[in-house]
Length: 147
Image (spheres, rainbow, N blue to C red):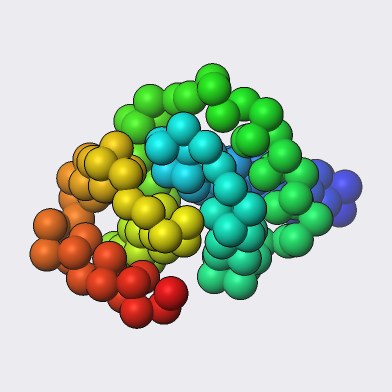
């Protein structure tokens, strides 16, 4: 009976760990997608991604490094926006989605240049995440103020 209870608890923690890893992979992939939309990823964008995942989303730094390396290697094997947004819509609160849009604005603004493709990507993401243009614009202003 005790072993059965241990197995149940271990399986539950294993499921939670898999969900956490999937969340980290999706966030990282989406952030790399935003950073690479202009055709290049520079060091300031990578630093912004890493610090956002660690400090804001409270992810483990060693896991972030590992997932970030994989996401950079696979940046040309881009997933559809629906792949990212369907998971985010199911698992993120409205506040967390707004925070994500603000972080994405911060990433594309961090290199000092906003490419049309970058702003278009965030506009499309905001729509897929059911975030209004006003809220997305406010997130952009907050990101600009932080820079």
